[in-house]
Amino acid sequence: MNPVHERFLRYVKIDTASDHHSNTTPSTKKQFELAKLLEQEMRAMGLQNVSLDENGYLMATLPGNTPKAPVIGLIAHMDTSPDFTATGVNPRIINNYDGGDILLNQEQTIIMSPKDFPELLKYTGQDLITTDGTTLLGADDKAGIAEILSAVEFFMANPEIPRGDLKIGFTPDEEVGRGADHFEVEKFAADFAYTLDGGELGELEYENFNAASATVKFHGRNIHPGNAKDKMVNSQHLAMTFNAMLPAAERPEHTTGYEGFFHLNEMKGDVELAELHYIIRDHDLEKFEARKRLMTEAAGYMNQRHGAGTVELLLKDSYFNMKEKILPVMEIVEEVKGAMEAVGVKPLIKAIRGGTDGSRLSYMGLPTPNIFTGGHNYHGRFEYIPMASMDKAVEVIVETVRRFAEKAV
Image (cartoon, rainbow, N blue to C red; front, side, top):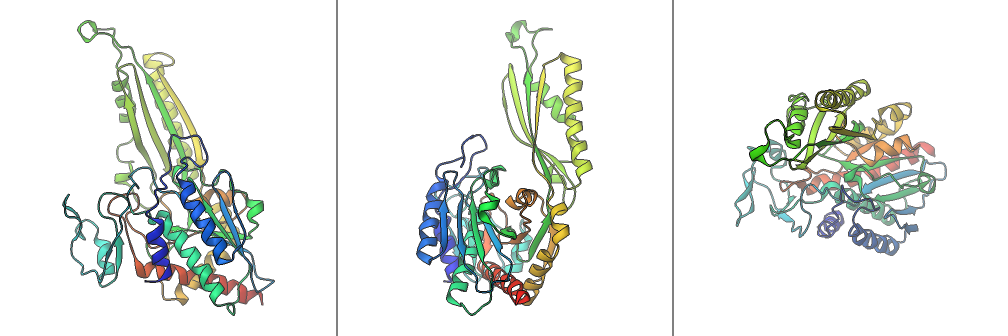
């Protein structure tokens, strides 16, 4: 088993789920368990300037051997999505996948089938790492961590390969949109960076959604249902009315490519008080702003109809499309594209239907496109990653760094 696979299998067994509702950084203390393990490993490898701060940000340096080469950052996040459990991850290895159904869990009859996930057939004959059907896997983004450290280890074992200084950064809380909140760009001191946080083999991304969150509270009036006529105001019905005012065709399950959406992520309530939580996404900034206006107008209409203060709307921008910051330095994308082609990977340049730490870091002065890790079906029980794709991610990192260094000679 290659070091990248061995690392990955160790890392995913550590529960690092973040928490949308926490106000601490990191949002969950258990993220420190992985951070401290990685800190120990990085020190044992001989990396320099290894530091883990109180907010859970881990950084280190691999000095280069080509003085004029650019300083390149390699970044991944340590947390996993809170949307599905990461407790008790028990990865399975499917050797020489035969192209049929995969029984993930016999006891619960959980099956992953190419009928539901046809991209599985691309990996017929390859070795896959899957879940046992009861948890997510954690390839998002522990695969990125394993790939970065394996590439660093390769450079250390092959000092003749030209490279500039490499800056390594592992962040908390990316999955809850706060991965860059306390990232010290000046301390990191890279000329540009890459997140290893993409999906299938070949993905290369420098566009992402503009993103916002919306919390909508609905205030009702609870009266005994036997005496409620013309008196009760059911906040839950108000919430349903509000949701019906948003276009049903513009939900995640009906959109793809550059199409944006409104996503009802969480709901709770009773007669007196109901609460809806949305995320709003669009690649186009004008359409993004229009989506926020639609929500504001819907809340205003309901307050006009039902009385001021019936609906409270809190909109908060999360991050913006990194494309604006990458276009002036497109060579950092072109070099990765060339590196992929050099190691036999077909580049799949596409817009991210989501965000990465790189989207915010790019606006903080650190241009940061995104490279594949190889994983599929993130954030759920059907998550898997082909081992060969992880190997190729390591090769792409090495080749990209080498290409920049050779140009500097």
